[in-house]
Length: 371
Image (cartoon, rainbow, N blue to C red; front, side):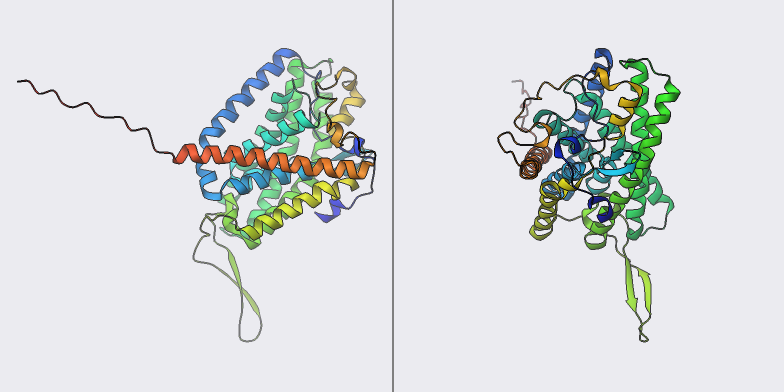
């Protein structure tokens, strides 16, 4: 993952255009309404179904996962020919906290990006949730679980499986956008031309997505497999050393028991997230992301309209009144991390309390006794 983070420093305003965030004006009103309805329905279902996942991991881990995805999305890596990409994070969220909580994580990240940082259009929020959130979480989770059923039941294989699933999820999300654009796009473009451009560039972005996801999931599994949702039914591989000093592998008889992260893992995770958002993000690539690059090449970008919150004090991941771009961008990233963490923590706490609260007592009617 380090190879993707240590990039040349550039201007923040250009860097912070996040991959595949659809702006206002790309799609017509009926298509935006339709994707909004889909997103609203799936998010509502996730609020009902995420209670078991949150009971197992706790709201703090869900909040930290969303905050980490927000932070890493600020770090664009170059993929060649003047184009960049970054983590989408749906497969990562599904692997760590489960699919329903993963949808909530991605939704909160996209909501905060759109409302506070003018990243992605407000009328296109449903489209962004559908493409970047629902699609990547669904594809990622389905592929991870399918791979883990076929592979030997070992926690050491969770990272590679998550990485492969994350890699596939990115071009699939690009294809979903392509189909939506074919239905309600602002410019008439041959479907094959748009699909080739979008999927082609996002296959390259998917490589970075897979590497980062595999590294993060593998690191967590190696230390706390009980905190990884997709690894809780698997048995870790233990490395033993015989009398001659030769290492041998043996599979533990017990699968990890679901647990809650302690203060130390949460503190380390939060510190890492703040460093990524506040410091590492300044070294991101300034090249346009995959969607922005394709939009410029095919004439779509000319139809993009400015976000309704473009005048926000945090627009373009800066802080109004602070002239130093590094300081403003770092502070904006830290503010975003804190907001995402707080919002998701509150939502997860609400979901957990609602699931565990006792049903209201209804007094039973006394049987009638006739004299």
